[in-house]
Length: 420
Ligand code: ATP
Image 1 (cartoon, protein in one colour):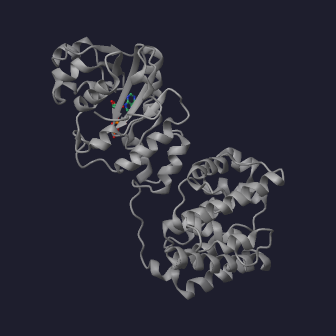
Image 2: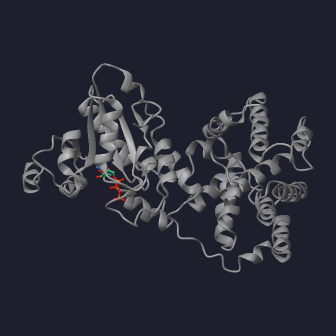
Image 3: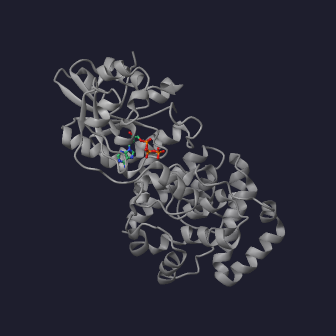
């Protein structure tokens, strides 16, 4: 028997009272607001105590067409449900591996939770219409009730039930259609570079952006040129026009420090140097200029950041402006540029290298900077990043600055693993 199905809801198994648990199985490639809305509608209409999102390992019906890895789909689901205390994610199907059969999922949940728990398998009407083709339908019907959420263009009622021989199933048909969103639409939008803002929770959009498996890999045509001395000279001469002399000294310091950190921590020194050189590309803009730049570039940035903390905008605006001006600059370099201001949960090594280099390059003078420099090579890159982040956060608090919610989120995502 499995030892745990979900951190939040394992207790239900040992509670003697009757419980009603919803199970939303799916590929979640990726999870979107339609999934969350349907889970919420089912929870409210059916009075469920909990809803478990259970991502498939391999899908029996979508062979070869699932794009994101099981780990990615799982972690996005976790991020999506975090702020709803009734929801959690279970990795049981992914841990079992192979082709996921819902009959196995429900059997495992049944034997884990016991007879005092009534299971409701939540599904869209599109999926319900194909239920007669699912493995071991008679066993399936005996394991749970089936909550069907209407989906546009996929009618499901008593006609479909008898036509498909589904009379053995205990169906509860939910009243309303939820949101007409699908993972297919989200994937298409991501592939074409369209915004998925409001299609997926913002925290999921950020995570997808980190390692977007849906975007066609960008041409890295002649990309080696961007690592050469001629390109560096070209960038520096443009920077001379964009920023002050003092700022340029800092930029060179960051490039040198990023290169050094990359050598020490096994990141790519050429990428680190390039990202260091580019990170303050938009630093010459004042607050108004930075806001205008966001609108000119059509960036979907959190409004709180645009209006309350314009000083954080120059990372994301620089990355987008550079992407357009120099298509050969690789995405991971641009990502490090974008993240050097507010950080992000799950920073890549290159992101951390640039973030740290920006804080501790040789021209920086603040109490404690040398202590941070002394940690280079003595502690892991993540620890060095965390210590640097902690320093910056403490300084913001001491100076009574506003803290961006993203900064808090980054702190929360690193703090547990980086206790001293
Ligand atoms: P794809 O577009 O890749 O087929 P999907 O959006 O249907 O994906 P899945 O992960 O396959 O998402 O779906 C899991 C379950 O959620 C299925 O039962 C599906 O019918 C249901 N579902 C997904 N989106 C909606 C929605 N907008 N309204 C109602 N049900 C939905």
